[in-house]
Length: 343
Image 1 (tube, rainbow, N blue to C red):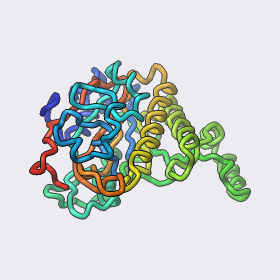
Image 2: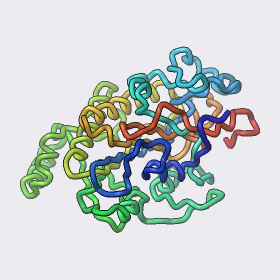
Image 3: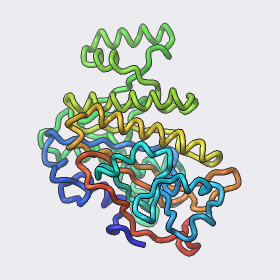
Image 4: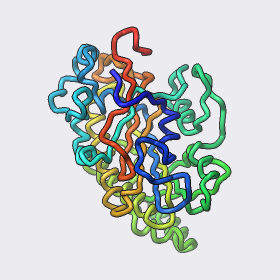
């Protein structure tokens, strides 16, 4: 069943960056480092797109997931075929306003091994070859995009998080920030942080105002993690209302080989809170903002024996923002019958 039009992950990424995209209102992200804003989120761990946006209209879905689909009645209908996971319900107002969209059954060319690390490198490098053969690269597609934006400088893009992201690595200079909760640091760590802040005024204000926990730690209680994600969303919005116009970050914890209902409920609630915090923080700038969330690969259509799913192929991309022509699920839906399953 086709929904809107056929699109590949590569085409979607390109389309989300230029005015020709049918997903965007008439703003041009690649025209100049002006008032338009782009946020790219890498969802590490292989998010299960079939659980986030559920193809309830597919006759094979329920049989493949008798346990995971048990709460289907709580899903939020999107278009009569697809339905949204209940934990993502806070995003429904964005959907209703046309500020939310999904690209389903999409993937990079990576097939062999399904390593999280290789899959993430392929996603962030953006230079994967055909038939699953990857083209090695030491830079990221978002950094390369900066080279063709007129007027871009070392403040145009910011990478947020503990780790430097491959998607932002390359010849173009970008800012790297890691907002931390100083209460989680040792006395020695707090002294070091204070010294860094005092020595560099550029870091003083962001560090002082941003009390964000390390988002790569997924052992926190759900309420505490949601606070962390909200703070991270506010921090990104703060950077994008100052001098930066492009931001990238990554959120871990999406690997769901077991107890998937619990994992997805917590992760989607936290991600929803973060996106909404960005919208609130960006205020009027939300109208010219595009947020893309993507993952290295999808998961198996058939649930496993531990109420989870294993590494698969086709996945889901999430797009939000006031610059979006949303309220649609974009897919050339292959169906979930056995001949159409790669894993």
